Image (cartoon, rainbow, N blue to C red):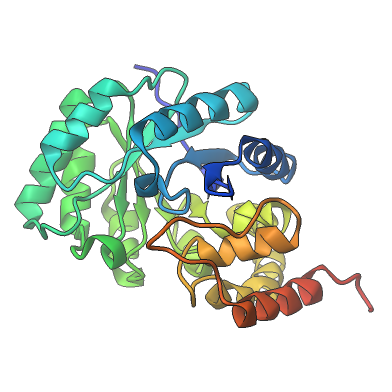
Length: 299
């Protein structure tokens, strides 16, 4: 199996809606926006893509449409989410057409709060069933259980099919421990936009981003500068974006990033219940920060 290292700026692309339906015209516009903005790869139907809000037929159609529009210009990762049961996840792997994807990304099971041994065995069952390389997604804020550094490293050593971890624990010590002890060829990707610069500075390989949906050129420029060792530029760009990051999450994700994208004319701010759109007050704050960020120099 040919494996492709996924580095630099990945974007967990949003799923836009128009009056409750997937808005494929907007999705095509967003795909062109992020590719033109310089992203290195795209994740379709990640957390920011509201994967668990879509029906199975909608997921299959979004996957198909996304691959057709990207046309091989950048690698595409398939997000496989919403399975608290290993059995259900394996059924999803078998029932989805994954041809054309570079890898799959899947979070550890939520709600059931498995032990570390349970998490390890869950991913090893996925490894046996998956036709593609796997990105481990550690997001304890959503799953209610952390994938420890030891478990991530155990998986990385158990099979070369595990090519990366999207580390979204917010725990820098944990991320650095994985970076230090990981096997060759295994990459650490930031799962928190605001922590991307320090993770890269410590040896990480990039990010799977939320903000790059709207600002791929600015955020991707920071990532490229950091990966090339130009930390003066990376620090400047990171500080430019610093105040907008927290506003993206005060009303939940992807409500915040969709509010920004609505301001930019990329899609509506619609999300699906139980999510609700960003409050007008939040949208106004985001608009102010966006105007400051995009204002011509010297203005």
